[in-house]
Image 1 (tube, one colour):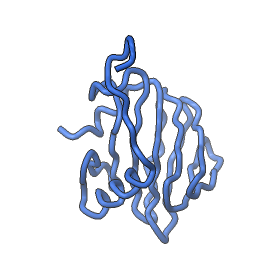
Image 2 (tube, one colour):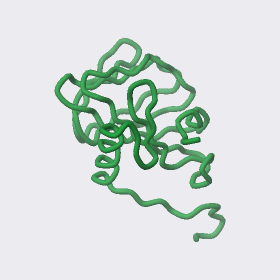
Image 3 (cartoon, helix red, strand yellow):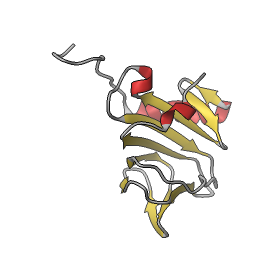
Amino acid sequence: MTPNATYEPTSMTFDALREEALRALAEGGYGDGVAHDGRIVAVKTTPLKGNGSAIVVGTAALPAGYRTPPHTHEAEEVAVILSGSGGVDIDGTVFPVEPGTVLVTPSNSLHATFADENEPLVVLWFYAPPGSEGRWLKQ
């Protein structure tokens, strides 16, 4: 462990995260992935799990044609699209997304993410500050 660190480093690959998210979507949950409002959300790193201190890392798998409810949060959010295509509506402007897209959503922006009709959308996301991720953790 590095000096002053309070947890071990975490290593993940895009391929493994995508495959786990798609399996969780197909099975209604798998690994860290839990069903939430019609999609799968997996929290990988968070202070609540003791493997982070100031940032949250997770994945979301949205079924084809799915749209998240519009929402806001204090945290700035970075989304990296691992597979699928769709868009993110941020304050009324739609940003198309596809594999390799990196999108930053400003804090307190009203936003909703959607998958195209043809295939699921898998997103690797990061946000800070932590706080709202507890609702997605397995109980």
